[in-house]
Length: 187
Image 1: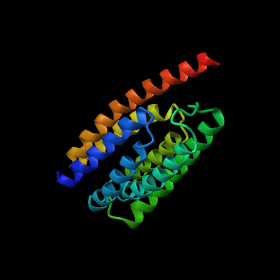
Image 2: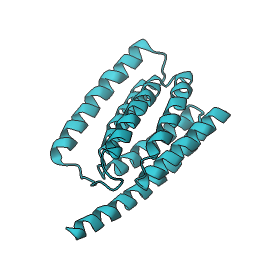
Image 3: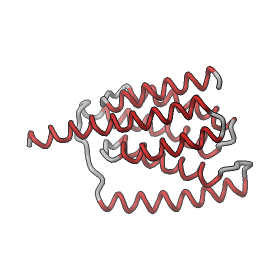
Image 4: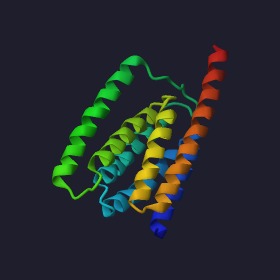
């Protein structure tokens, strides 16, 4: 456990907490945490997770722009069958292809797990940027599985972070669900 890992964990925690509160500044904390985690995961031979962090930076910019184009409380959406079907198929296909590429061309000892969690996280971050309520439920699963992976890789601060992120995802879900219910009542 290094000071850099702890800093990345704190930045990420703050970012997720702020996104649960729907504060646009969450994206800046997320971008900073992801930039640091790119290095940490690369060094830990979690290549898909490292690449995912680069995409988190890109999606963070997208989220920042998307959330700034409207007021802080713009509408929260639900997943529909079309988005669910397309994102599920896309996640499975890209996870298998990425896992195979990591298996063949890298030294990763967990290529398919690494790839699956990375691709799932990418899709889920897109859901967050688009303010889709169910992103939080998916994050709970991803974060708990990631906790196990990081324990296996001896990234204990990061494992602790992802366990706390699962709890914060439950918090974010409750906050957004409450706001969605209030907005529905106003109609």
